[in-house]
Image (cartoon, rainbow, N blue to C red; front, side, top):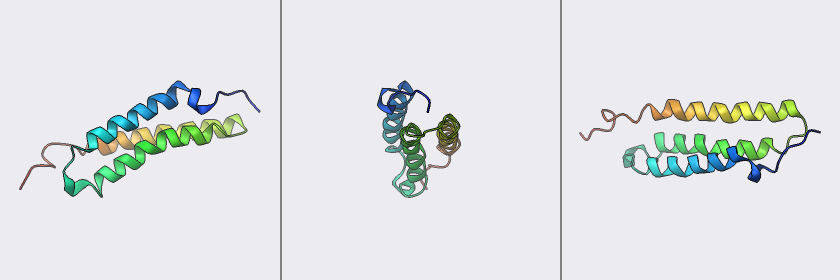
Length: 94
């Protein structure tokens, strides 16, 4: 077993919680038509980041811990891709 801090003591976990809060605030500005599509997908992606950090912190081995860190990084990239869809031309009123 390797030494690690409680996940609530990790700076990255605190930053990810702030990121979730910010993304929830931003997605509140999306059109209501997107609530069950784009907004839902963005929110699921960002909430998985601190969730994976907390889960991975309970891993016994360093390789398993590092794998979950990679999954969290993947969730960040997923959110970045999804955010590209928040372009004004997509949300123009008809």
